[in-house]
Length: 483
Image (cartoon, rainbow, N blue to C red):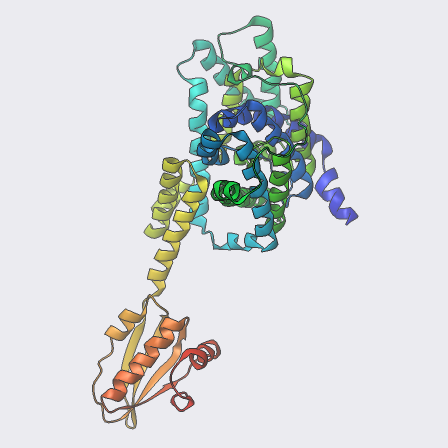
């Protein structure tokens, strides 16, 4: 236990603290922007990012991952806020947390293994494109000074690491260029232009909504959508950070942690949230490996708001936009172009459809679900080919089945069989086949019945243990048919 604590909290503390500071600065404009999308006060998003980041650093399953208010959740709650107000949003956030805790207890994290690599690539690429597109309004059509700040930010971010690696380049860009702006001034947008920032800590209160079935009927659909979307995005982000750091994380613990974070956040005036892949990538690329970086990001975010609020509002937006452009470039899987040329067409299609659906709906969870469904359909189609070979022997006729027999392969299997009177016993040989479901068992019953109607004697042989078990449990055949 002690070794685990040291590993998850005390490894390279300097690098993790510096990375957390960089992330905290990047969280501010994002949290404000997501609050505006949801139609609530900027502090609702800022409180959410502070609370979720701090709580997840302790109870989450993925060290060095950043969670907070996100666009995916903000988009879901727009109708709720516009029709019922912010109090119902907070109540929905609390219920969202409860649902995610239940998901964690039920170990839904195991479902991650059913997400194919092609969907993962599509998810990452769509997210990179969305991160980039979100920066367009802060870069183009504003002023020449904005372009200069963005270009200089990118030069610092990509150039400084060649000479200085101990201090994250994005932090250097933020401090230096903000100082230049404060001293000399420029025609650029700032963080303060996005909304007012109150310099106060969140306080506990119970949402002012009626505690009855009508309220539950209003918030439950939103809470369930928020819980599922937030969990999908969090677990996928955790998997991406796992790959980037060559470490393992507990997806079920992460689910419970996200639930606890959202449950607490709702009682302190924050909107729902989940893992943030952009900020998580910034964190990892800045050298973060432990929970200390996540804790630092949350604590520094609140410190910046309360103590340095007057300075924070002067941070030029093109600096933060430039950093996020760097994140989007680093997030995009540039090898996916080669992947599309070499991978099976179905895998390439799944990757593309995942990207398209995410960009069209602005909902990462929907894109992933659609991608998984198409993968499942293509996989079922691919393995649904069953070959039936006929062989006439002296004492019997043999039908040998080869392949996976389930609901999708039954029609092609039966179409290969010629049902007529053979005058000999008919052996159905399943030594090279496997029966998977009740549809497969029903198909065997049908084959036997059709042969018997022609006056043949039929018996089933060479079933493997699992196939024999399902036949005994579901088939109408007597034991005498099985050999």
